[in-house]
Every structure is written in structure tokens, then in C-alpha cells.
Image (cartoon, rainbow, N blue to C red; front, side):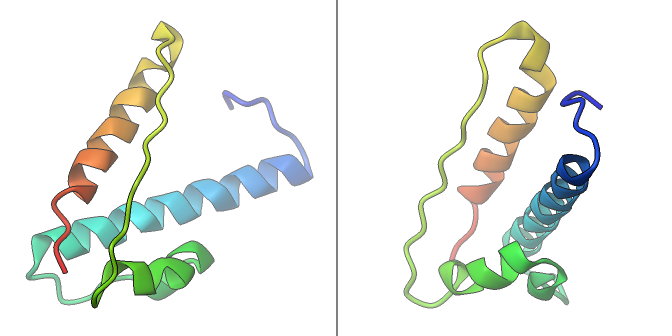
Length: 90
């Protein structure tokens, strides 16, 4: 779409976006506190990050956002994700 990726790069971009979507669902489940299921095992990324979300772990999330007007929607979504991450408590 926006990246104009084709072939193998397109498939990689799809997998990255899927992993980031699952990461957002994990954060939402942790923030809600009454979630029955936290989908850690739905992507490799969240499986690897699972220890960073619990116990005595201290995790820092950096959000990169473009100041370009064309990227406004993506920048806003990234900032909202960062805001949701601040509400995760161990």
C-alpha cells in the first residue's frame, strides 16, 4: 500500500504489522486488568516480549513519530499506543 512493497518485502511487512497488532492487543489486555486472556503466543514478537511485561521487569517503550503531515494518522496511532503502554502495571 503506502510502502509500495512487493514480493518478499510485502510478506515481511504483513507479518510485522500483524505482530504489532498483536502487541497492541496484549497491551490492551494488560491495561484492562479483567482480561480473561492475554494473547502472548499469537506472535513471535509478543512471545519474546512476555517476560518484559510481568514480574519485576522494568520496560521502556520508545515511540517514533514522523512530524510530516502525510504521516499524521500513523503518528497519532503511535502516540496513542505509547499512552496505552504507560497504563500497564505489573
